[in-house]
Length: 201
Image (tube, rainbow, N blue to C red; front, top):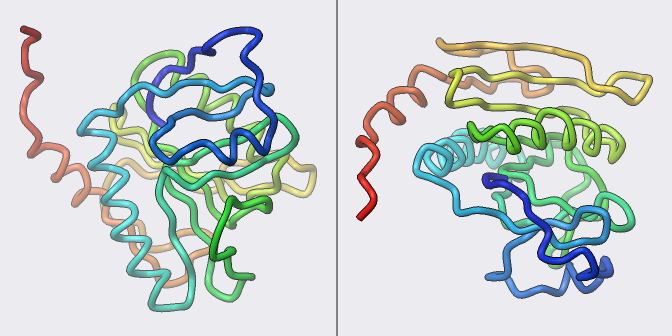
């Protein structure tokens, strides 16, 4: 998820069920039993997320898989809940539930990295560790600032190992996703169409 994480209050603890029952317009992930707020994402982040959903969604739907966006809640373990930017259940796997949160790992979780140091640490360190412990087989990191896609695979020891990386071009041999083509040049082209930052009033 985009945005720096700041706990509301050290004593403002939530149970797993209370977090799961929060209204859709109530932002936040559950970290150590504390609701952690999310900053509003920017256009680079959202353009990247929507592009991934379009590309992965078309590939998965044609084969019986499923792709979800950033509002889907995953209860990783007691006191820990995350909302990845994109998640995917691969074709042939057990389908996700119609209602409610996911309490089991999808096949793929994806985070679009924001440039703030706190966000980089969260996606590259905290979530890397948490998603591995949850049992997510593939963890993708898309970094628009460095223009790099990294794919990690869960190893037999329960840790992620680097599986593939690309900075551009057409990625035609995506691990675990036979037939999927990820055209990074197309994505970078969409990001390049965005305007300059507007000055604060």
